[in-house]
Image (cartoon, rainbow, N blue to C red; front, side, top):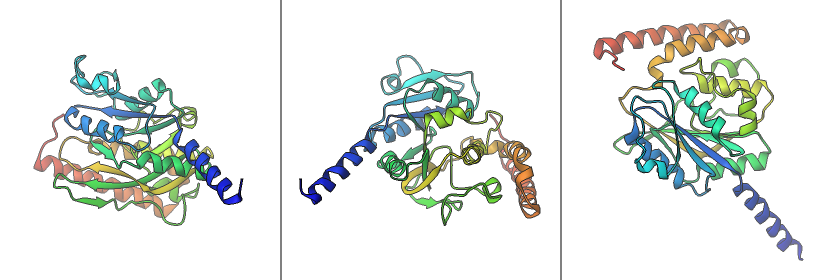
Length: 276
């Protein structure tokens, strides 16, 4: 076989292996079943087919047995308000794929999201990859996050890793199931900052991650109850875990975030008391 033809065949076989990743997608949901269908649709529309979709409901309203959602995904029920971390971990324990991806019920993925992450993992031989997060609004407008992907490579175990958001979120990554389970999954004590905590633990345990700016996760902007409403408690727990890695400047950074969080809570309750 001529060399150009042989290289073409080799590239095709590599691409085919990339597309053969066995991916389980886990979607935690909590009282947002109207958004949930759109999230599932974005998974089913992926150019890289998934092995399974697992929806873990920890809302106050169970997903009825006659719901069409049961024909589109495996549905697991948890006690109300068990938390997103518990829901994700429960789904991961039931998953049979070699790789795990997590999508919140109010978010969605670009159609090439999983394909791009899979190709990145195969190309760089890493344990996982994470993509870009983009806010999307009801009027159709989009906006990149300010804590977008880091420049100059993936953060290592330098102090910056422990205090500055690395662009790694709970809905924009693909990771080996074995690596996730070895770490015990998400920390269920953290109702927020659990994604950054997972990122830090992956890095500390020498698991390799790679960035993939082409993989886009769209994060819906709305005024319903969100995990970040409990951000202050999560920040305190996260800080207690990693304070010893920080220098003086970074300790001050957390102090500033703490006082800003207190201020936001006061303003929120003045404008509209939070009702669960």
